[in-house]
Image (tube, rainbow, N blue to C red; front, side, top):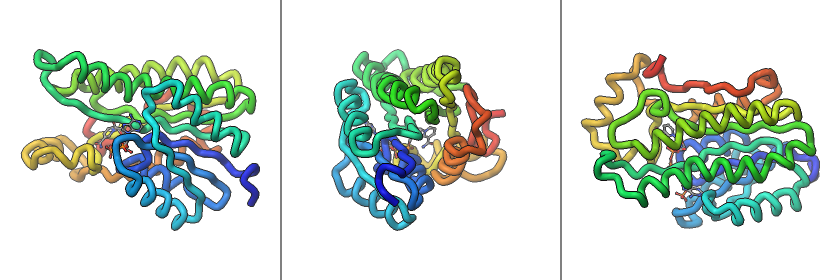
Length: 249
Ligand code: NAP
């Protein structure tokens, strides 16, 4: 299949965890998966490319900070130059900098909002015109259960994820007339490097809140993203789909 007839999928933060699982789940011979990463070394990105290829797709990892609008714009220009289109954008890149709010420095607030919320806005802003011209496209934002419940120590993170849900609904309303869907997926407690640093005591406390009795896998989230990105979900927009084993109902 030639490059210019492939379905083009862009996933932010594809070097580990949920983003990597999404890249692998979306990989097919008819799909080209672009993803990015920022803090890690190239090896993790190369491993994602290898796993995409193993799943039968084509992958390309680019190092960039989603919080930088010029870098994001440059990246999407390159994708369009190479493929002529973008069919799916998954805003998955995210960070935490946890601290009780009375101790939270301005820098911790600003950086988490810049990556988790402005980063998603930057990508939607860059891709919207491309998808509007195509009169088709699908945008999926990875939010979090804590946007709904709040979580001590995560004022910055919960605000960024709640903001992402507002952004999802506005973008859904603005872009629907051009045939573009915009949804959010809100994972609960998923086993990734982000949660890997939590103490056993915290993990046990989280597990106790999950009716299905297990921590989620990145693949549990990737499956729902793949559905939302498919034609089977073409009448769903502006929604938040919860993937949390029942910990929030
Ligand atoms: P993760 O394993 O830490 O992966 C985060 C990804 O984002 C990595 O690929 C990372 O790449 C990338 N990234 C971070 N900052 C970036 C930046 N400035 N520019 C570009 N890429 C950047 O975390 P995860 O658990 O898979 O989380 C993925 C998403 O799910 C996040 O939005 C997170 O908030 C959300 N989520 C996770 C959970 C959970 O329980 N794990 C629950 C709810 C929601 P580098 O390391 O190279 O920077």
